[in-house]
Image 1 (cartoon, rainbow, N blue to C red):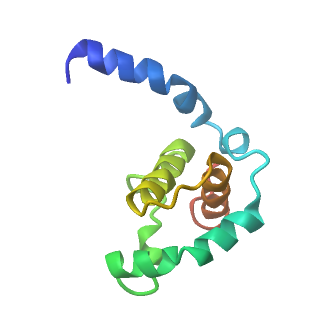
Image 2 (image 1 turned 135 degrees about the vertical axis):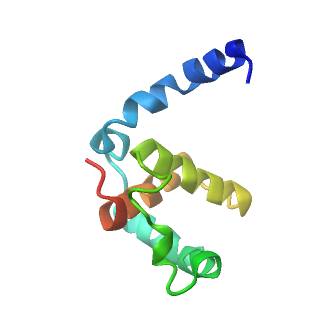
Length: 107
């Protein structure tokens, strides 16, 4: 990546990176019940199971590549996009917040 492109990307992501340090502010106001409902409705566990085997929970590795609240939210967004779910930002945040509560435990 060219230096200018890297700088432009950093500037674009700065607000997300700042929020990434604090799960409480990133997930503030999230509807945890909605996150749980959408996780079940879109059969996320079944997809994860196909990827990693077992019940799919092995995909949740707090010390793996998902190591910040923002990375978790971004991954939920990538899943939504790859499956063409067209979820709202509020829905994505709700799913990520529920995953954080149940698996990642970011502060």
